[in-house]
Length: 274
Ligand code: G
Ligand code: G
Ligand code: MN
Ligand code: NA
Image: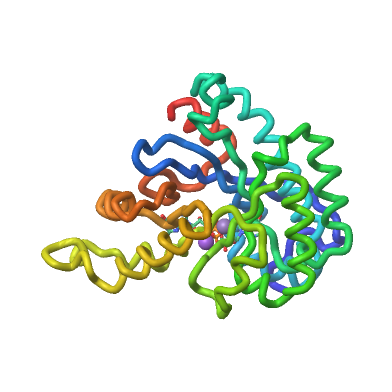
C-alpha cells in the first residue's frame, strides 16, 4: 500500500492530530460547538486529509484504535474548553438555558458502530476525560445506519440513554428511506454541503426565492423542525449563503465563511474571541 498509517494496529499519537472546526449559531456567528476532524502527519507529505486515509483505516481495521484515540482527544479538549466557554458566556446563562452548553461533534465510522465494545470504550473515555456526555455529539451518516440497521437501532438507543447527542451527517445524500428518522433517537440533521454549495448568487436574485435549491433546504429544515430536531448547514462559504440559510430558519452553520478546521491552539483562540 502506498499510503498507510501505523501498520501494527497501534496508534502512534505523534502521527496524528485532531483539528476542530467551529459550529456557530447563525444569527450571531457565535461558537456553539466544534467538529473534530482528524489529520495524519505524514513524514514527507505533511498533513494528509482523512478523505485519503480513513477508507484505508477502515479496510485494515485501524479505524477502531484510531477512532478511540480521536474520541479521547476530542473529549479531553471539550473538558478543557468547557471552562473557557463558561467565561465567554455567563455561566448562569448556560445554566438557565439562555445559551446552550458547548458541544463536541465526533464522526463515527461504520466499523465503530458495529464494534462489539463501542459502548464500553465510550464509557471508559467519558470517565477518563471527565467529559459530560450531554455535550458529546456523535455524527453518523444515513448510509451507515442503512447498512447496519438492526445494530444501529440498539447502539444509538444505548448512546442516547447515556445522554450523548446524535447527528445525521451528510443528510439528504444517502440512499435511505425517511422512515428511519422516527426509529432513531436523533437530535440534529446536518444539511450536506452539496446543497449549500448549490446556493450560488444567481439563486438569490429576483423571483428565485422559489428556486429548487432553496426549496430542498427549506424542506429539510421544515422536516427537521417538525420532528423536533436541530439543523446545522455545512459548507457555508459566502455571506449570501449564511443570510439565506438564516432566513430559512436554519439555526446553526459550519463552513469556511466562519472558519476552516483549526489546530487546537487556533481553535482555542477562536473560542476565546467568539
Ligand atoms: O476534514 P476533511 O475534509 O479532510 O474530512 C474528510 C472526510 O473524512 C469527511 O467525510 C469526514 O467526515 C471524515 N473524517 C474526518 N475526521 C474523521 C474522524 O475522526 N473519524 C471518521 N470516521 N471520519 C472522519
Ligand atoms: O463528511 P463530513 O461532513 O464529516 O466532513 C466535513 C468536511 O467538510 C471536512 O473535510 C471539512 O474540512 C470540510 N469542510 C468544512 N467546511 C467546508 C466549507 O466551507 N467548504 C468546503 N468545501 N469544505 C468544507
Ligand atoms: Mn461530519
Ligand atoms: Na457532512
